[in-house]
Image (tube, rainbow, N blue to C red; front, side):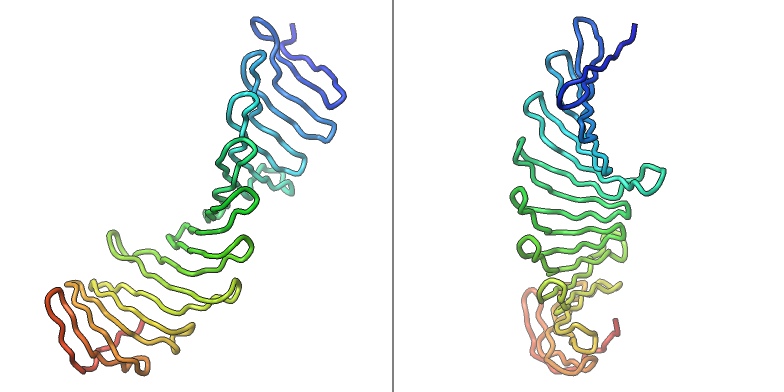
Length: 241
């Protein structure tokens, strides 16, 4: 005996599976070409997946009548292989799901915050360890901070800070950790020629503040430690970065 059978309805073809104690719905093929897949015992079948002819597949979780979307995957239909090109992840109650992140095959991940249909980009990560941070409303997010990969395990990460409207951001300051444990702070930009060294902190926590001056000729005017500070005026040996 065939375990599955189809029943045509005005809105599509319903496929059922015979099981002990009855029949359960496992698939609906709509006249639009959508395939809806169900799981669960007879009378308690719940929607778990919808596949569209465009290559989009929606995934659901939750009990029957309270299913919520948790992931949307877009597949590339231009190749014979089933290769995904984007994965969207959602959180929230049924009917109020909001997108919280999007993953790409190259390893990049974009994170979102905000209400449904008004999500905004707040952060992006890359496989090489870079992290980008954004501010602004939906469609107007602008880069404000960039975290760079650490040079070694346990070492501090470099930081860059940006200003400007979306698509026209420019670097205005940066923090550069050196291999000897020193951290240097630069202001100005966006080019290296426009910035200057304004502060250094060595591995012992001693801070040195510098006067404004041409790049490479900044002068120390204040040295400060946990329990002291000294006003000085010596040139600081400059290390080109």
